[in-house]
Image (cartoon, rainbow, N blue to C red; front, side, top):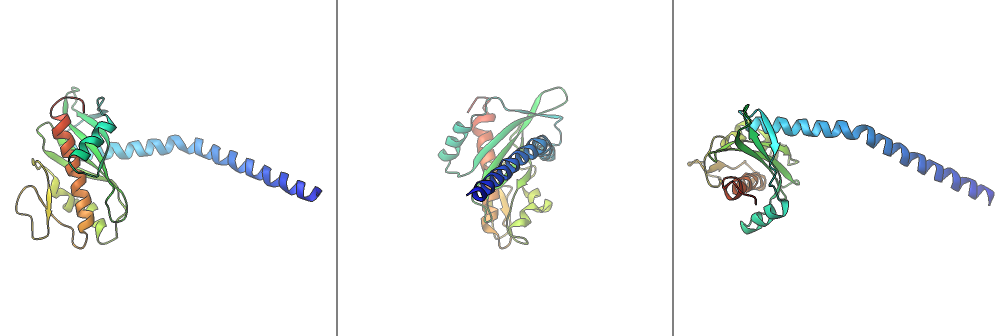
Length: 203
């Protein structure tokens, strides 16, 4: 019996110490991880709105209202975050809308889309993606993403027969699901811009 009690105490002590060590590691790494994530987002914002000097949270953002807007437009995407892009004088020159698609082939695809004050898409930056190498991961290629850049359109669509209009995107070869997810992400950002940001009101 004493041996059982002794082993129980030892196991309990090991569990408690392990828990404390994990907690300590979390506390030590929490700030650096948060800083790294924020830096990655800032770099993404800058890449899609290069004229901006600063990015500040859009104060009127309402996640529930944004989701209703997506539902109304029959989009399954989720608007995660909206920031205003400001120039050196503090004037808002556009917005960066970050959206997550739940319809990627390999999981969620999160994209930041820069849209200027005229409603022109200035660029997109993929924050997270886990598609198939050589197929869906082609979406990370700069030349493919450039199809969205400097386009003033209401919505994008993809085609397998060669883009012939500003609102058309060449589908990724062998990765229609990924193409659709990325296109919907950008379209969701455009919907939010057109229905909320361009009207200057809260959603």
